[in-house]
Image (tube, rainbow, N blue to C red; front, top):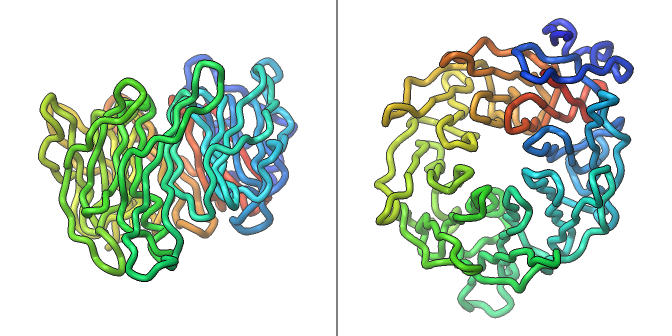
Length: 406
């Protein structure tokens, strides 16, 4: 097993190792393999399935933008990734979500959300089929089994009739037994979303991996959550009330749910990270995970690990939940508006959001966070498998999509 060395991880020599392929052992250890090239072209919105065997991304030029969705399958016996292929009907995609099982894609096209399913066990995908139409759709989420999708269908901007009540709707659809998607169901309403609010509004919606729970910011500037029941959604429960700024909207972002929907996490402006847990009577009063100038918050699937960026100094920190409380924060390394991915026993992050920068990973071992390993010198869009034994990312210096395993 080769170990990624800091002196080589970001160099072209280390990244051009397509011929040296290293498979992950049965029980992944702390050492990462040398990077393996998955695709020769640059991409973004890199995704990986829970088992680390399927990858998806949007292929683009040198900068993030519209492009075709491409996929690859890890060939365990040959210890390499298959040749990447474009998903039919996915040209001009701007969003892609790969479900945890690795067999369903939710794709945002210029005027629709569409889905595609894998054919068999190889890297073959059906042509993308339209799920919902609209030029301003956003916030698409997909359950772990690929059987439930939610998205936001907002009114036009500007409104066609001045003074008309804007009603952005959170919609849902479930896949039926024959593989087709059922009728769209309204889950709830959101605040009006003019174009300048879209970046923040895209983080207002969450769907648990088991599809049991959805959370969103509603039209009354409330953070709410609803439970799925018998193919429909129950009445939403209030989690936290906010005020609706006429220009910027409610000061809420990074809404996330644990895999089983029992814990809800969100960021309150840039001032705090809060969490609430579901009880038999509703949602518990919110508690603070961290305060003071936070950003880029991310939570693990089990809801017990939270990582975030913090300024003065710029850094990535992590906290674990145990014995009924959040442990002391641990600084993992430097950052400036990072892209963060959290798993139950791992945190991966880039140093800077939007600009290729150092990619690091820290693993949890025997209750302690280990010193971070530098994977690449210039990387974007990291993605970790559920057990954190496969890490994919877009590498800028050598160009392309890369993978490391342990």
